[in-house]
Image (cartoon, rainbow, N blue to C red; front, side):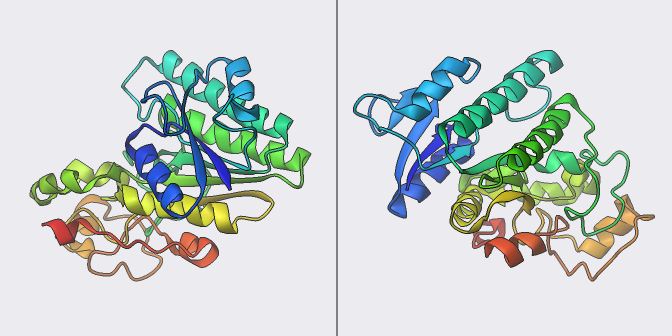
Length: 281
């Protein structure tokens, strides 16, 4: 396929672009930062005209797109003002989705985030392990946008039954060089309770994108995408007893198994994490 990746120069985007190319796809990187050539096209997603034009075709770069991976965004709360975060992320996503819809691009995979699950869990989750089955609980403007993006996708696929939109609720994205800091997390169970001690290796995040592009059918669906383990060496039973003692446990937590359930992604997408920080400890 010829695939456009917005934010292809970002932390996850770089790995997604290289992974999709390794799988034989023709990838166009739509970003504001990058090097000329190698599929890079500079696009400001706040400008709808630029977005629709870049997806429709760019001179000798491409003459149309088969699928779209939307990763570009302000990547976390607190980096910009709340209003700036809302305008940048919500408008950018609407422009990308709407341009794809107008151009007949029927396969979209995009980055939602674990934040819609109720991070930073100052109000504890309803149960553990956490999954996709309870209603979104945005606790920041950044997270609110992620929730609204999912609602936007739900309506767009209702309008167009052939359209496929997959929201990947990525956990905290890590590269191998980030793992040197992980042993320090054991010192304080509450330091990483904000996302239930989760993470995702960028290479496995890219695998999830690839699997969604290959397997997702028409309609909308959402998936938690996390590593198979936590960031901690301390056992889950100890962590939960200390931090979430009143939260119901709905199944065995395992010794260090992820508390952000990836069962649905495994079952539906065939996603299976291959990388763990423990191999770098």
